Length: 304
Image (tube, rainbow, N blue to C red; front, side):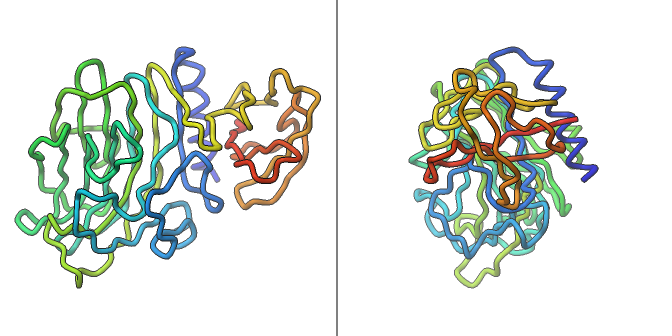
């Protein structure tokens, strides 16, 4: 709980310090349900879990023979970035067999995740053993030996340059490669697999890739995809502020009723649109408009 409160306070402070065009998404994977800000390509629910290692999203790798196809369980955040951004993740994994890899990626087109335009991964290559490597725009990957059980991976675009980086501690970063960025719209996410091109065979055992957190900071703009999740919106209604310290509002819908759920899926109350979350303890919650059971809930955060 202490860890969650510290992170929430950090997110709130960052939000106050940033410009109006800056967006921030931080998922610590506290448990079911999965944050509705995520999409999953080639979902195989038997190979990922939010409960196998509490506080992590765990992916069990499986054999993946063709890098031109989308991997199983490719998680991607539904917000498209319209400018500079940073995306990072803390991963706990042991790639002991050739081909096992935990991946962080960003790309131009969410429907074609087979060959992402920016990749940084921690894995095991049949030539170099345990290592980290990165590539921008399908360039030849640059790599470095790395053998710890914890790694921080980061992709960032600043101006005319994109970077693939890693860190052993989350503070001191090493750039593996850099290159010219592409297009105006990026999505980002992660996956893990036993990759044939790194030496995996069908008999390669599964690796547990545990994602402790995922952090996306859009530095210059966000364009939300219309897939039921719209950043800080409920069915097209804006929620402000988010995060919030006392209560949030849904401008233009102050008289309507909204249902609020905790991370376990339990309904914790109903609120009018002018005082969402009033009286609640700090934490992560999910908001839905009343009378629309099929709509996806939206994540909101209350801080101290």
